[in-house]
Image 1 (cartoon, protein in one colour):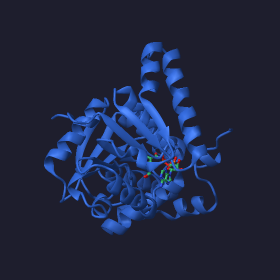
Image 2: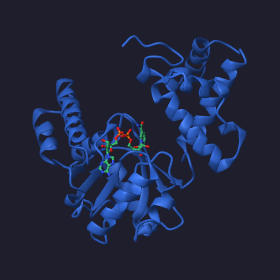
Image 3: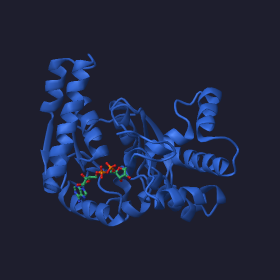
Length: 287
Ligand SMILES: NC(=O)c1ccc[n+]([C@@H]2O[C@H](COP(=O)([O-])OP(=O)(O)OC[C@H]3O[C@@H](n4cnc5c(N)ncnc54)[C@H](O)[C@@H]3O)[C@@H](O)[C@H]2O)c1
């Protein structure tokens, strides 16, 4: 596998994921341009990125010189057309088909024919996004995990229309980022959510039927299976609204009961108990 030919990377969206993706690209030596339409989001995202890089220096993960070189490879812009010269673009904007289609229509028109377009979508169909461009054979899903600098996995999602060489190039690009790429066909949930979502939903069903307390179920899965977090701590971390949304999309795709959201999950989301971000989910959080 070779990622030859990729030198300049564009990242669209500088939120939670885009900021992390831009950081790992620049860290791996790619000239990286990050674009967010919203100037304040761009400033906030870049400030967090710089904070993480400073933190890495303080923890001796990066030298001062490496940090300076990393930041020197990064440019921030609010104009998508500045990404025209990129060899590969990772889209990480808000999770709606409309927002992503608008981004890809502009990128498709602005970028050279050889530019590879990728999306970090968690729930939309890669095929549907690919066919909205004039280059579906050069369109791949590139699904990173949060927090991007710390999580090793990247899912490389190919479609019926993907060019095999492009799939290999994108997987090799993932490796150059220091990640562990897994090839996966375009099916809602890819690999991780396909297995994780039914597990999380089953934990809620078990709690609902009074099998054990949330704390005990979490402890059982940590000490019995060696998982770093139990299902309820993980649900609170991911967000109950996000889990409900992804479960709904997976249920629509597969129509199988293991993806159907349990009543308790829906009620907790309606009640605003979304997990860590709202201060209360299956557990309570002080700040
Ligand atoms: N949050 C996660 O844990 C996670 C994990 C894997 C994948 N994802 C996916 O990553 C993508 C981004 O998620 P996020 O959590 O970083 O969202 P976020 O809301 O933190 O960031 C999205 C950013 O995109 C910007 N944006 C919106 N429209 C734009 C446009 N047209 N051009 C440029 N910028 C635009 C917004 O201003 C915002 O800063 C989504 O597709 C999501 O499904 C998220």
